[in-house]
Length: 493
Image 1: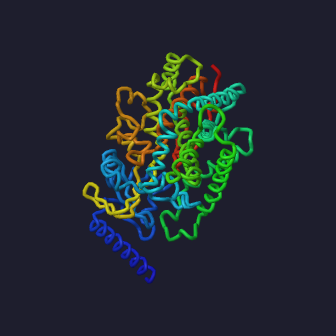
Image 2 (image 1 turned 120 degrees about the horizontal axis):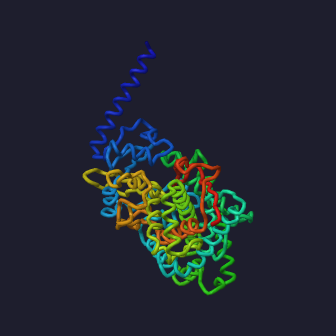
Image 3 (image 1 turned 180 degrees about the vertical axis):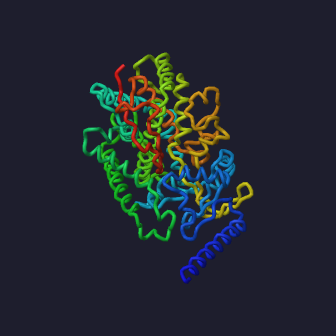
């Protein structure tokens, strides 16, 4: 009897709590959403694929939805119209960042253009990025470096083709992306298949992405900050420390040597010159932290996109055939694709767009936060709320995209839709003030790498797997990876 009384008492208390939560939501005019449980809120609804769970919940609660994730009020945006409202019409109000605890390692959030608030320091760093690293002139000047890295990727695949061995496409692309960035920044490779120190650097960047992608209890329960129960910040401190020590050594080396040898200044030259001319805008610490940002943001995203694109064309042989026919006709069978060729390869560009629609590199973009109460479409988003934009769900919205789950590059043939943040149905790089500054480099790198791999080899899946049986399961993290790495055998033409 006592047991039954306790159970009934608990049920009554839970019902009362849920009723009060519902009334509280109405009183605060919060966006609709599932009723939170005591303490954990709605954490139990996330699962291991939060982008899918929240997309499913939005079908019930609407495109602007609020949840309680532990102690954190979280607002989720799941439609292009609502994304436009948040990322364009009220961009400034939503421009603050929700900073993960892992980024407190080495106080990275205090120096990083990704996490700094929109203020004078952020503006000066962003201006330096846009004019000295990602401007058209600067990217044109470094084009030869990128072509050399693509040649090395093709040479690596050619070695495998000669012995009939499969290529781990994501790993090979990751190495290429790392070297491409390290040559642009420092005029040298920081990773190759045969060097131990280079392998260590590659593993460091890989581990940073791994830690950053893990769900961290501290982000849901800030009271646990001092304990760091999963040790994520502790491990991130070690990884960041090693990378910053390496970058510090490269800066010291350059300051001793003077400008980089050769005709073209690299990014490190430009940044050091800027810090001499305008020490108030950028200093040595900011230079090292900017390099860390570029490696973390620019490697995994690029290599994942290439791996998904290759997986989609291998799974859809008729799309691969079409792409190969265009490449053969426009640049000639077996040749490398150069950046100047991409404008003449519309189908290749359609494949990249369609890949970014279905597999956006960062499914929730980078989380935002509001620094004051904001009203959106009649609802209140309270001060301190975290704001997630589910770019994955927006790209698969069946009310916008016909046959949304099918890989159909042809949908972009006659379409003016672009990925540069103006069309909110397709925002793999975000939009507004906080749009990814690396977008101009990504739209050059991915089609060149993909086109060169498709035009240089025939491809088949490892172990005789049929295209229709290729596993396309996703592994959720800060970036969206293939759960099972793509292994494909290059066949000499």
